[in-house]
Amino acid sequence: MRQIGQFILFFVEYIKSRTFNGARVIERVKDIFVAILIVKRGKYSSSFLNSSFLILAVAALVGGPIIAENNPFGSELSSNQALQSSIVSFNPYEGNVGTIVSAKPRDKMVDYSVLGGDTLSTIAKKFDVSLDSLRWANSLKSDTIKPGQIIKVPPGTGVVHKVVSGDNIYTVAKKYNVDAQNILNFPFNDFADLDTFSLTTGQTLFVPNGSVVPPKPVAAPGGFYTGPIQAGARGDSNFIWPTSGGITQYPIWYHMAVDIANNALPPILASDGGTVTFAGCLDYGYGCHIIIDHGNGYQTLYAHLSSLGVTPGQAVGQGQQIGFLGSTGRSSGPHLHFEVRSGGAQLNPLNFLK
Image 1 (spheres, rainbow, N blue to C red):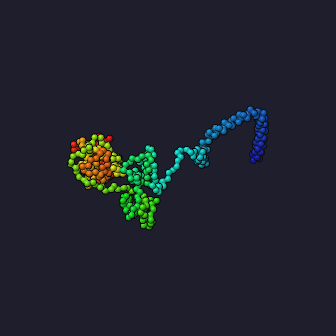
Image 2 (cartoon, one colour):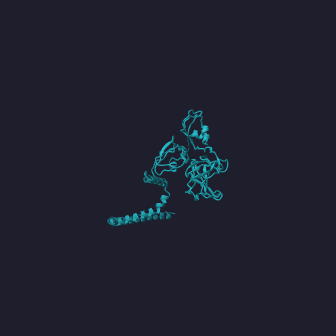
Image 3 (cartoon, rainbow, N blue to C red):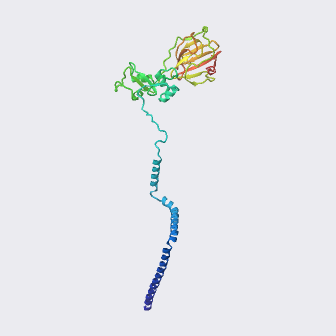
């Protein structure tokens, strides 16, 4: 045991001695290395800096995406950048800048002076009303207008009604084929009594979405005429259009005629000169209609009229008014059914109209 204790003491002393000697050697080497760096600091510092920057660059390339991906503030930063970008790039004068037209309804009739190039259709579109509303408000019998003409424009699509004695909202609504609530809902209609909605004679009432119902036909003394063609009442076969409007049905083998529709109920004109051989009304078929013999082998027929302005045997000239467009007989709406006949056969009117 004594020998083991002596050995341990010897071993500890040996380790101490070797450690101290090693430390002294390291200190001397360190001193030599520091001295060299101090002397050569300019040469080695440049390389050291270059190496450091290279190491930092590599670390940024490798670690940058990883750090960005796991950055808890990334989404907030992105949104802030997007907001900043949108603010910087905003241009208040970019795009179409204009006045927004209010949807508030007009409270009264407007007088519009027709300009060059205006049509009734373009005026209706400009004021956002229907063509019929303009026709009814101005008692137009055709769509022909001219510059300088004053067109009365209603507050919207519908009918402007002047109250007469005995009128109430229910009779007015029935007259224009609408519900009385339509009249009450228009904000600028006035009532003498808000409890009974009574009206004042002479006041103007706007009926939204109302329509003018064609008047009942007034027939001239009707019947057939079998006498001779009147002197000087012969046509020249140069037929003109008998009325204005749009074609709703073209000639076809089972309907060899042309249908011309127009809710304004314009006048009907003789397509060519001749003698009236029939003028009368039926409750079916052609309804109120007129037949003119042109004395040259051709006859024309004008059907579904609302009123007749000629009598059988009367001589008429080309373009003369003979009645008004309507919807009598077998008809689904206001229109003129126009035929050209020869030798008892119906011909295509479009081959003759100029």
